[in-house]
Image (cartoon, rainbow, N blue to C red; front, side):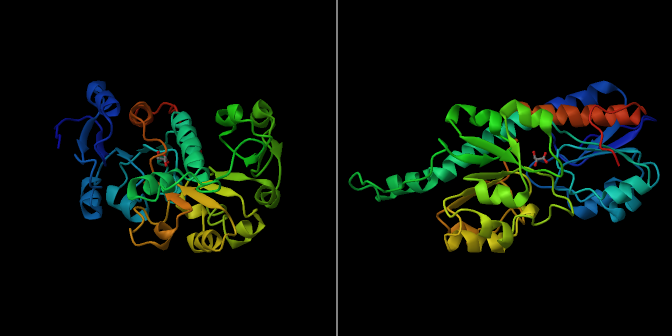
Length: 323
Ligand code: DGY
């Protein structure tokens, strides 16, 4: 725990964030900050409610719920919130807006790491790598068999997308995407065709989800969507668990409605080890690591720190959410 007494703006940092961000805060000479000095255990809610009292700025991560209760506890000094995440579903935007609190977040700097992990998860799922290593380790590896552990190839496939550039070398036949409206500039880079969500489900051999979790996207991946997918299709989610109805996904996977799923995000997190999804061979589950490379996490940490400092100076942040 670091404590400094001065007249500088007070800031609370809810996690031991990667060193680049802490260094920026320390060396800025612009703030006095207190830190929840652990990365293994999130700050307990009660402690957080105590620590935010009277702060001018708050730097949080995605495990902290920033809601009316917390903002009330913080009080009227709080001017700037900076989250070390691209996702903002843990923030009550309405409450922040009501109080005129500016919000920084960390898009873009994690795009490469997330895209890489998405490709890794897609291939791990479609080529059944977890099952394969398990078989090799546990004596299931008998003679070479003609259809044993066969999966699905990207070559000649249709991919519903956000990782398209990474997949270019895999000879994908067609990229399609959906969004609230077409995004021609982005789509033209990879020659992707804009389709409806229904068409995305029907046509995709690989369907990757990467949208933010908002009231509009909550559980958009549900029975209805899975029922339109091919039974040879692979579903990948590296966005937020809340965009998927997990009961419907379990049903789709266990009945063979779809061929497999790779999930980096779930509801809740961590997913209890006795969750039915863990019993399925055709479901690969990772513990929310899409942006987990040293360079990306440091870049997120630095961006969160800089957003906070800029916000406290009353200047435009590098990445600020429009409320
Ligand atoms: C985010 O930033 O929202 C990711 O989910 C974690 O990197």
